[in-house]
Amino acid sequence: IGGAFGTTAMLLVIYAAAKGPISAVSALSSLAPLFILLYIIPMSRRFPDIYTDKISSQQLAQKVFLTLVMFAGITLIIV
Image (cartoon, rainbow, N blue to C red):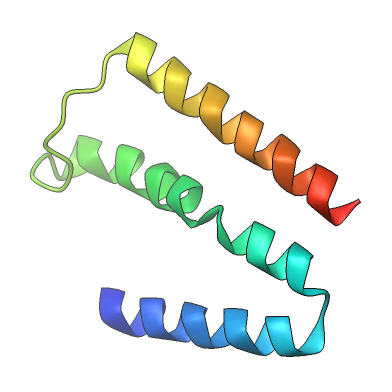
Protein backbone atom coordinates (compact mmCIF):
# COMPACT_ATOMS: atom_id res chain seq x y z
CA ILE A 1 0.00 0.00 0.00
CA GLY A 2 2.83 2.36 0.86
CA GLY A 3 4.54 1.75 -2.45
CA ALA A 4 1.32 2.41 -4.35
CA PHE A 5 0.74 5.66 -2.47
CA GLY A 6 4.34 6.75 -3.02
CA THR A 7 4.17 6.04 -6.73
CA THR A 8 0.84 7.81 -7.06
CA ALA A 9 2.17 10.81 -5.14
CA MET A 10 5.25 11.09 -7.36
CA LEU A 11 3.13 10.83 -10.51
CA LEU A 12 0.87 13.60 -9.18
CA VAL A 13 3.88 15.79 -8.38
CA ILE A 14 5.23 15.29 -11.91
CA TYR A 15 1.80 16.08 -13.39
CA ALA A 16 1.43 19.17 -11.18
CA ALA A 17 4.91 20.37 -12.17
CA ALA A 18 3.96 20.02 -15.82
CA LYS A 19 0.74 21.99 -15.40
CA GLY A 20 1.56 24.58 -12.72
CA PRO A 21 4.33 26.83 -11.45
CA ILE A 22 7.34 24.60 -10.80
CA SER A 23 8.59 26.48 -7.72
CA ALA A 24 5.27 26.08 -5.90
CA VAL A 25 4.97 22.40 -6.77
CA SER A 26 8.50 21.48 -5.81
CA ALA A 27 8.24 23.48 -2.59
CA LEU A 28 4.97 21.86 -1.57
CA SER A 29 6.28 18.38 -2.33
CA SER A 30 9.02 18.96 0.25
CA LEU A 31 6.36 18.88 2.97
CA ALA A 32 5.99 15.10 2.61
CA PRO A 33 7.95 14.41 5.86
CA LEU A 34 5.45 16.57 7.74
CA PHE A 35 2.52 14.48 6.57
CA ILE A 36 4.37 11.27 7.38
CA LEU A 37 5.05 12.55 10.89
CA LEU A 38 1.39 13.56 11.31
CA TYR A 39 0.29 10.03 10.37
CA ILE A 40 2.93 8.08 12.26
CA ILE A 41 2.70 9.74 15.68
CA PRO A 42 -1.01 8.97 16.29
CA MET A 43 -0.62 5.49 14.78
CA SER A 44 2.33 4.73 17.05
CA ARG A 45 0.04 5.01 20.06
CA ARG A 46 -2.09 2.13 18.79
CA PHE A 47 0.68 0.19 17.05
CA PRO A 48 3.89 0.80 19.04
CA ASP A 49 6.07 -1.21 16.63
CA ILE A 50 5.52 1.30 13.79
CA TYR A 51 7.67 4.06 15.23
CA THR A 52 10.29 2.80 17.66
CA ASP A 53 12.11 6.08 18.41
CA LYS A 54 11.31 7.64 21.74
CA ILE A 55 10.30 11.24 21.18
CA SER A 56 10.78 13.64 24.05
CA SER A 57 8.77 16.82 24.28
CA GLN A 58 11.90 18.82 23.38
CA GLN A 59 12.44 16.78 20.21
CA LEU A 60 8.78 17.10 19.25
CA ALA A 61 8.93 20.87 19.78
CA GLN A 62 12.06 20.99 17.60
CA LYS A 63 10.33 19.00 14.83
CA VAL A 64 7.31 21.31 14.99
CA PHE A 65 9.52 24.40 14.88
CA LEU A 66 11.53 23.13 11.92
CA THR A 67 8.31 22.21 10.12
CA LEU A 68 7.03 25.75 10.64
CA VAL A 69 10.30 27.11 9.25
CA MET A 70 9.90 24.88 6.17
CA PHE A 71 6.29 25.99 5.76
CA ALA A 72 7.32 29.66 6.04
CA GLY A 73 9.98 29.13 3.37
CA ILE A 74 7.47 27.43 1.10
CA THR A 75 5.03 30.28 1.61
CA LEU A 76 7.74 32.78 0.65
CA ILE A 77 8.53 30.78 -2.50
CA ILE A 78 4.88 30.61 -3.54
CA VAL A 79 4.12 34.27 -2.88
